[in-house]
Image 1 (cartoon, rainbow, N blue to C red):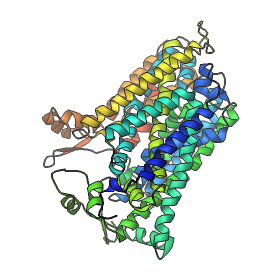
Image 2: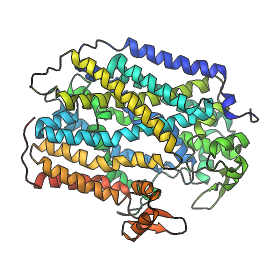
Image 3: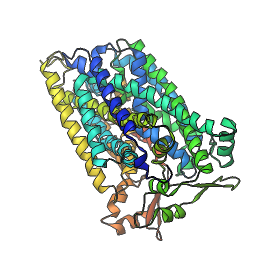
Image 4: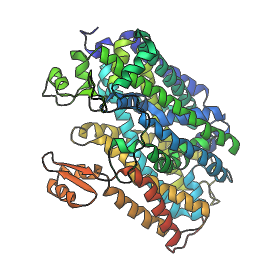
Length: 563
């Protein structure tokens, strides 16, 4: 097997299992679709979905295929460890707040999104502003999630990446059209169970291969600094991975981000509206905190991968997958250029040469080590998770777009029970599905020249704070849209000059301008490398921009017309 290219290890049996799983998910979605007579059925699942299923769907949406691949990769790559798990503290705090306070106001009347609530309380302007922020923060990020999942699938299956993206797009549109949120949620539940089972299988496969079992795995990972789980460093302004994954960031900054992610952003919040009662919705969001155990499991899988490749270093074909950058170099040269992993405290060096990100390592291990059929099942889970992430955003984009056009929550002559709105919703699903699939293809063509991943996920830094502030102002029932717009613009400018992702794009056409930014107190510029680096950590932008936008919304005078 070591003498075969990775994609040749993906057997016809694996193909059969992969396709069979996707067909099975489609059949389950069809069986669970229920009645689709109104947008209440299409977007809220008839408000009849059981809270455990909704909770599992929230977990699956939060994790996604990117997490299934990316969390082990993050630990495997240079300086990876368990400190990311500290963010669970802020995440759990946020879910409890959402469950106790946000859910209560959402169920005061039937609405379809948090933006409808903002419109009811502050007027159409607030609803439009929040919806636009949702569009900006999610469209690029979701396209990247599809691309990031498709890249390793292309490597291990041998299919062209364009085909991988097309399969994800077609199934996502089909699943959403089939049964709206009911199909989305029940297929999410399937991904949640497959992810969990897949992680357990991967962990125990490595443990059983070691003479010393789990003790040997943990000891070896500890020897090279991979099991560090706490970071108590405190620096309000320091940038860098080590200062982003600390307890203080988890306690102070992460709750602001997660309040938006779980309580305001329609991608996750839409699920809460599918429960029949506020009590059920509260249980769904709070019990989704157990999803942090899946994150812990995948971190352990990352440690297991590290130990496996410590004892079985990459061969030439594996190096092709693990070190894909710089196509002018041979795989051996690429691997030789990569640094050895080392414990930053003791300096002990491992046998593992680690790639910069390692996103392809776990899928490669699945195909290389697991028995045929089982590897197909786990990679089918990655495919299905990418589909699930896309169909979730399709449902959210369709609902928010429809609400901007028709305002079905208002008493303006358009009833939410109007059957024609379901047809319009389906048209919007197809429109957004084609648009996002096309956008993913566009990212594919420019990814060599532009660092797409940091740009996409960095977009949430621009929108998280203002979206939360708009919601909090709506809860108060007083404030001005004019002030919220001012606060949003100021927040955008602050993040613009803290992060570097936009300037990386500008650097392609105006490098001298980007170099001049090094004179600002927020940046350092390395002349030799031609690289602009942030001085301040972007994570503090989450609370800062939320507080600023809230203050402007409350203090700037303005007149709001009730929706």
